[in-house]
Length: 307
Ligand SMILES: NC(=O)C1=CN([C@@H]2O[C@H](COP(=O)(O)OP(=O)(O)OC[C@H]3O[C@@H](n4cnc5c(N)ncnc54)[C@H](OP(=O)(O)O)[C@@H]3O)[C@@H](O)[C@H]2O)C=CC1
Ligand SMILES: CC(C)(CO)C(=O)C(=O)O
Image 1 (cartoon, helix red, strand yellow):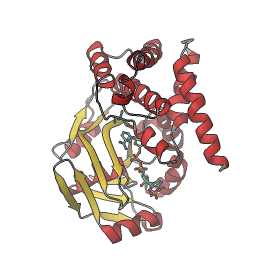
Image 2 (image 1 turned 180 degrees about the vertical axis):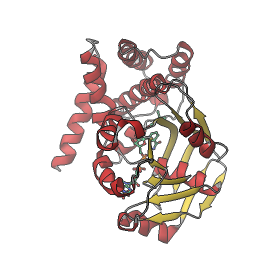
Image 3 (image 1 turned 90 degrees about the vertical axis):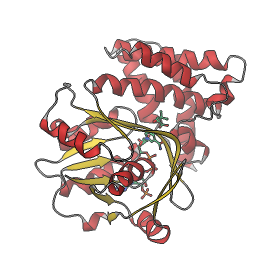
């Protein structure tokens, strides 16, 4: 299987880098600035145990040729339109696309452009970032990649993807209910993103304040109600584990959206929060705390664009 990873940032660089290190056929599509950074500093993953240098096959859009069996889409939502233009020439009749972006909106965007039949349900769980040298930093042991056919079937193509991802140095898992699991991930991410961005601190910072814990629990209740109204109620055990994760005393956990926010970078508020509000409104569920987060992040995004 030939894999094209679009973007060698925190997620694409991590999962694609591990696959390359495990001997899989991986090519990274990157842009000139990132190519220059990698040429200077190497392609490096730093995890809690140490540093791994990756021998990576790298191309820029003008060098793309042939077609790939699988494309791992790992750009931020606001880069998706341009990235789709870049990959279009190498999407062949049998190419599958597996995105790890947060939220759900990108599935419709990819399906509209390339056809729903080739977009695989998938998401990742990781706390990763690039440092000032462009090294990929895995900030916690979490490194999960989850994927599956929407109808839960064990097709030959999903088995081939599963075999390609398994035993490559991260936790790869085939889901038989990816639609529900995508909502579960959103339950976690939206609550974490709204809480840490609104309060500008870690989970530990928030729960240390009077009312902090109940604020997080209120967010969790709102997004759970939305998921449930869409027929994707989170599994009770998952929900309880998420509640514990998001209310753990002293936890340094933050959302990737918060890390972008405090650096003054663009944020995916449209996909992570605004889209949730739209889906809440469509089923008549009230989400006042998420509304607050939407205003807060909307003001940030608008000011950022103006400045
Ligand atoms: N970081 C994390 O811990 C997690 C992130 N996610 C989600 O994963 C998605 C990706 O996030 P993340 O990896 O953190 O983002 P990063 O910003 O770290 O990486 C995205 C990369 O995509 C590159 N890129 C953008 N457009 C193109 C293009 N047309 N061609 C080639 N490369 C391109 C960017 O390169 P350039 O330098 O050229 O701009 C950048 O290196 C997001 O939706 C995020 O919410 C999900 C779970 C955890
Ligand atoms: C919820 C979490 C931390 C797990 O991957 C995440 O997706 C993010 O920070 O963007």
